[in-house]
Length: 396
Ligand SMILES: [Zn+2]
Image (cartoon, rainbow, N blue to C red):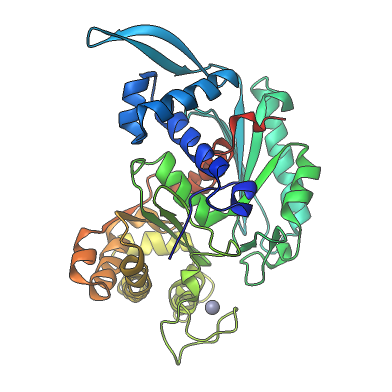
């Protein structure tokens, strides 16, 4: 299996190209500098790059105005201190869900300067969601005294598989109203800014590997448990897109050969067993009309036996699917996100049992399992991080 961490369309078109590698190295240096100024030797240590490579990258970044350098002394020796150029530039991160849209404005040094969210009706048309997002974005920019000229780009998360050939949402999306829409073109037209679109689980993974406490993780799996179940994969420091851009669809791993028919056309997929929609359906048999994702969280905390049983069954099944992923990728950490993540150990315990049952012992024992600390902002923050992964000269 080979994967290459480049994330731009151009690097995807030229896998393994020199420019993709240079871009990745630029990202590493910029990410290291987001933590604060550093000498070139410190940057080499932080990024694992050679001092010669760091020196070349710093020259490029300085020429582009992204960083500036000044002489300093380090351990009694002359050195060059590098820092990010302070500016007003922000990235916009937009996260579309079935019932919400969230917008954040973030700076390159990973500060959220403003954010807002709006509720959307279930089954809303894509166009309505896009216009709502535009309204939120424009309001936040005005509030901060910023204009389009201060925006480096807009990252957008969509909860569904994205076909990178046609830039459309593929069938099987949690948002059926978005299927077939040329997301890049339509969003670019509507927002009037450069737009980069990705699947929400990929962005969750990117956020965890960029903003979260697992910033140093080179191999990370982010799994979002919601009305759909999807995973984002970071391997060797970058997202994995595969051939078409459709990866991490663990919601459609077969768990039960004789289970229910899934919306993807297969039978017994993980989603038919462990999505929040399935949990709500199962619990609604005894309490019709009252169960929501929110009430599952409350009931689980109150020790409600049927809720705990449903969570246990779902967690074991999710752990089963994640065990297969862990055996394939051997990640340092698996991060669980979505609306149930706030349950913490109540949710993690059955998932952990499922993982341990379905991995080889060394992999199971060495894979950390945790809930996301970024909460419902994870995907929007990942969308902003996607913008910062672009070349610094991409501003238009
Ligand atoms: Zn399926």
